[in-house]
Length: 346
Ligand SMILES: NC(=O)c1ccc[n+]([C@@H]2O[C@H](COP(=O)([O-])OP(=O)(O)OC[C@H]3O[C@@H](n4cnc5c(N)ncnc54)[C@H](OP(=O)(O)O)[C@@H]3O)[C@@H](O)[C@H]2O)c1
Image (cartoon, rainbow, N blue to C red; front, side):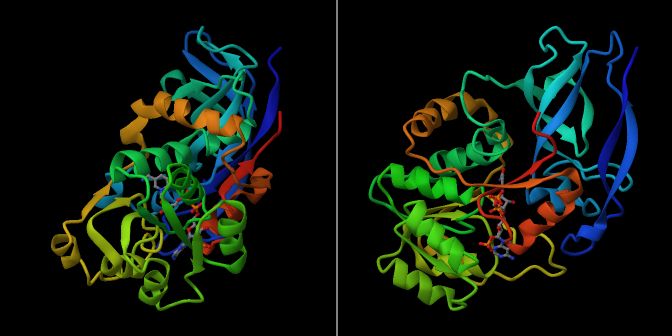
């Protein structure tokens, strides 16, 4: 007999116009049969952890040519879609067995039926918490690794500035840079986050950009001789101030610009001529561009995890009902490290 269970989902009500709010999302309940159709080549998974990511707010907006270059927008009335860590409940694919753990693109719900090409099996012999596959051993980790090493071509002794430095990507970039012998400074939005960066994560210095609105002075104090590498997570005024403080032949890795995603009129950046004056190389990227580097990334990062040389900070919120608050919190700096939504433990 086929078991039928309740399946809660997080649905987008309608396209958002400015910064996403909890009220833009609604929790609904449906039912799902815990069985896949024979011949469907699908697997049915129970979602354990869902990754909360800033790009998800972009996909909540009515699509335009910029956002469509990123990913398909969400559909009003349908669940959000994101990266999850899930357990296989039933499978019509010989590559996946009941009880396997997978990392996959899933709807924001308790149970999802997925087509197999977008799934990778989790190697449980890599003895880390399953939630790490939403971040450190998932998108945030690969983004930090590729965005820093591939785009910035760092050298020992160089000066590195990371914005949104206490977040999922930022706190890893800063530690990767320290591990290779760079001088690293981060910016973040509270005193507690600044303390975390300097006292727990080994940054050489950090400042609270909300308390020091004169960003140019803050950067001059932290980098009296200038910045070699800027890992860009926020954009806007921060980018403008950074350009004034970059060294000749500096590199800027444009990972994200969270301060700009939901503005009606985006901030003007006045100091772009410095890119030419200083021969700066500035490059945007998305994590998926570097998917083929994942094995190399694992080779790099796993020894540091095993030796306890990397501090990974997770902010785990429990229960699908709390998903909207966890996601929206990213745009208000509520998270410390990687924001994860725990839907179920097993
Ligand atoms: N290119 C890619 O493939 C890729 C992949 C992953 C992420 N990203 C981008 O990388 C950046 C960081 O992502 P993440 O996943 O690591 O998120 P995160 O840093 O863990 O969370 C977002 C953080 O951004 C900061 N923030 C929010 N609004 C801001 C504003 N208006 N001005 C300045 N800071 C603001 C907040 O920290 P504070 O308290 O410090 O303000 C918040 O905690 C984002 O821009 C994201 O879109 C890009």
